Image (tube, rainbow, N blue to C red; front, side):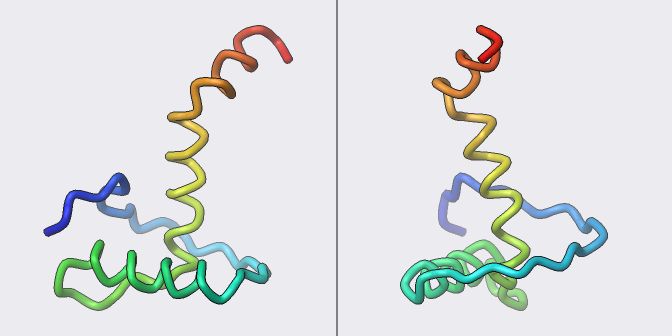
Length: 71
């Protein structure tokens, strides 16, 4: 399996989202879902968005610093 930043996804209650994505981003998410599935059924792009955003927020040092500073 490829070394990806995003680990296995937890099976949470699905949440409906309505979002337009650029076509290239959608293709990238489709490819990421295939790689993350590692031979199993590909993971849908909508299931990737929240964990990716959570990971982004958790690792954004500027955001963490600003949050600690009370901004």
